[in-house]
Length: 263
Image (cartoon, rainbow, N blue to C red; front, side):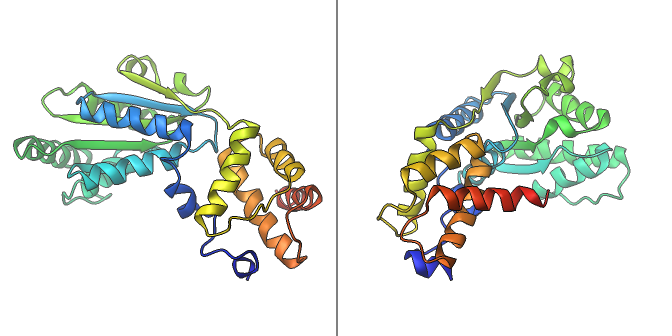
């Protein structure tokens, strides 16, 4: 296996490894800190915006994990959907309330609001994290707005939105946002540092990517974390297969061409 060849204890660029490093990168750690401030101050609504692949989902996932560890009732759901029923059912289930996608909309609302009332009485913070909210139908967006406008409950909602898609939420939701966090692609230096940090965490301290290879990987990925991880992972596999001493620029180019040739 390539891990044994490079002396790695784990896959350094898999999703789980990337999740573990959310708090170490300046951009994602700042975004995480601001989301935690939003929840800690009992604010109602925050937006996490950025281009696809910049780490929004990982930040939300880590935010929810920490909120749950702190005792909050935290739900993490997808905004993608055509109706409010499945969306509300998923939220209710993650808040430990009995619901199914086949339930009627009225009873689902009753289930969700009753659970929120119970959490308020128990003094348990209610958190709702929504990934890709801009992909939701008008019905889903209206459901989120309805939750936010009900001030009887102590609820904090955070949602990720693709760059340039904030307007799709509609003025009603956008106007309710108390905080907007922007995630940007990594710079060349940040990409190079990330590669080395990820490898170090996985047990390898020797230089693994030649300077030209790291620069080329940055250029081909555009500094997007998801693409950086994809290309770096494939380059390690290819490098092990060729028994390279370190990853060179040609290997990065080759795995990039293979990856995108099938798309």
